[in-house]
Amino acid sequence: MQSKIGSLLEDELEARLVDETPLRASWNIPPGARVPILLEQADDDGALERQIIAARWGLLKPWNKEQREAFQWRTHNAQAETAGQKRTWKGPLTSRRCAVPAEAYYEWEKITEKDKRPYAIRPADGSMILFAGLWETWKQPEDEQLIVTFTILTGAAPDENAGGVLGELGRIHHRMPLAMSSEMASEWMNPVKLSEDAAQELLKRVYAGAYEVARGWEVQEVSNAVNTVANDSPELLDPVEPEVLF
Image (cartoon, rainbow, N blue to C red; front, side, top):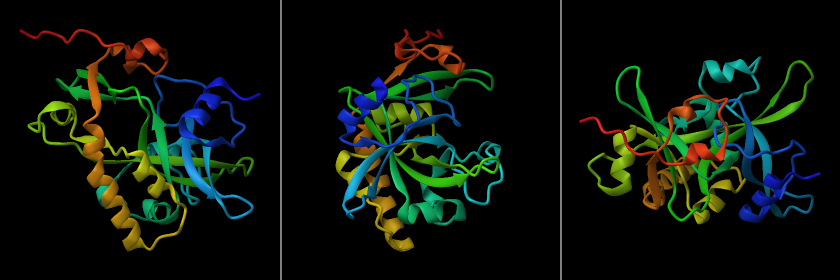
């Protein structure tokens, strides 16, 4: 039986849910969790089909021997500036590109060495974010089952003096996940195998458009409850009153 969240994603993303892994709504997703990603693959007739697949957040390569290596090397994010140079990302960049849908994401502003303030960042119009990602398949050594894993590409955040939401993003953190317009996402997900140079040019265009997408976001401080992964409810996205320091 298909989950409610699966049906909602199919309607929202105009894609087919192809994985039998149950999907559930979550408001506090850690690396290592299985979440839906969006990609395109050719069907039996050679036509492109947009698919929703449950994938593990933290990209694993065929040479990885165990899942914890994704945590050891922190492969849940990939720096766009070097993605075309490092062997972990070069292959997926040329032919295994995906989009990662989300309603919002969290970022933490460093106040002191021990104090970080969480913010929820999301489109002001309530639409879906589509992050640029890369995917890979990995064989579990214990049962040889193939699982899909992925990473989200990140880039430098805007200058904190940029003003508006871009300035807020730059003030909170020096990096940001790269989001795409729906048009850019369609081009990004096309599974055609590109040369390394062509793939790098495509990534540059994603990078160049990310700030424009982010202009439509809003940034709101949220409760420190999001710092604990066990907390997972819609209330985590509720804004709180900014802390007054003076």
